[in-house]
Length: 171
Image (cartoon, rainbow, N blue to C red; front, top):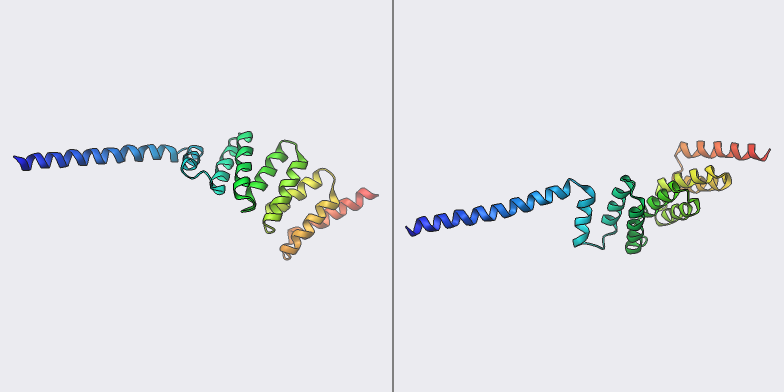
């Protein structure tokens, strides 16, 4: 009789134990299905991770929630300072989309200072300068990038085209 009681007790405790973890697992799976919720959840436990904050900002950017994204990129920069270039670059992209070229320029330059090999920042800074007619500055950015990637023919081609445009504008 006591054996049967112990057996039932063990079965009940095991069922409760497995039920608890099943519910916890289901809740976690729901969070994993929503990337923003996933990163927000992680930040409740680790609020000072610049990479996690940047990942959340990237999600907000993809959802076109730019004000939230800007807030998160700035937070990532404040915590990580010059840890990596991506938050500066991404913030520059938002400013560029919002028609704020001076702010975008500052962020692209800062991204390059943080990581001189971060080619995306060179590309977008060049495009930004060229769009607003600052061809000489665009060429200078590409020449700086050429020092880092001397064997990239696309850089030479871009410098050549911008130089032709610059010379044509002087005539």
